[in-house]
Amino acid sequence: ATVAIVGCPFSGGQGRAGVEHGPNKLISAGLVDQLTSLGWEVHYESQQSFLDIPYNPLPASSPQLSADEHASATVLKSSDGKEDLVQRLPDPDIGRMKKPRLVSAVNEKVAHEVGSIAKKGWLPLTLGGDHSLAMGTIAGTKSKYPDAVVIWVDAHADINTPETTDSGNLHGCPVSFLLGLEGCDVEPFNKWLSPCLKPEEIVYIGLRDIDSGEKAILKKHGIKAYTMHHVDKYGIGKVVDMALEHVNPDGTKPIHLSFDVDALDPTVAPSTGTPVRGGLSFREGHYITEAVAETGNLVAVDIMEVNPTLLDPRSVEKTVAAGCSLARASLGETLL
Ligand code: DIR
Ligand code: MN
Ligand code: MN
Ligand code: MN
Image (cartoon, rainbow, N blue to C red):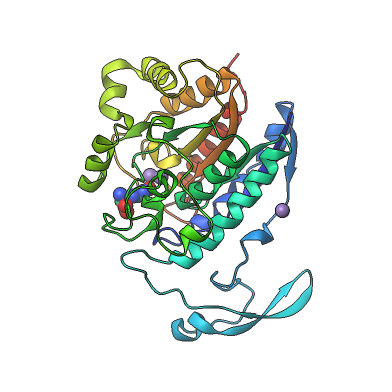
């Protein structure tokens, strides 16, 4: 079988720099060889040029500009070894949404990329980058598998709408856009993204930091969520059984696993932008990925929100190692 790694060095869905270095760190830690050792044919093209869009921050190689200049500068940029003139466009807030044009344009490209990989019959493994990218990854999965279901592992529900978001950070909103909730039919997203997920096609595991607006949305739409309270009460084995039973009662549907590493306890995955104490243990997190792999129905995986610029080297190493081992377990690595 073939896995194609989609590295998304993107941080525009939230406010903390550094998460754009997640993909390279996971790759440098040896992920390609690790997956090859599991028997996968691995496709990976480094530093994906598909994310290079006019709203992106300047490449590191470009001359430093002030914030004002940055907003609309025409800069020299080399692509394919050739110098080009690129207009970098301003991206003011729309309503509460921060960087809406950037997040939308990047996700449109991610959806295309993930969709075309899935259409080859390959498994896309997307490395974030922030979790706004799941707008694109899940839209891509749905373009190939319209009946796909989503297992969303996270401390957060990421189901704010442009109207309910307090932070304005779009990594807190991807699920709403996929569901097409009230307030999500807005430009620029509605130019390319149409609702592709039904409330009964997603289940959450690991939640423990849900905004009040999000709680109301989860209730209103009857969306199944197994919080850390449920993990404590039933144990992870039972929770995963119940989650799979909810989204996939016949065991026939394709599964997209979207894993935010902040679902893990901060002692396990400290280097992430919005850590919340009381999270999944190392084994609980891995159990989820192993059990999903065992279904044989997995068609796409996201490993999101690894930020290798946060905290000390030991914390970074732990977090990156956890990201790699979650990816391996998702792709069938077993303990025995
Ligand atoms: C919060 C935090 N619910 C927000 N969300 C995070 O900004 O909408 N998602 N951290 O990963
Ligand atoms: Mn293409
Ligand atoms: Mn998330
Ligand atoms: Mn999160």
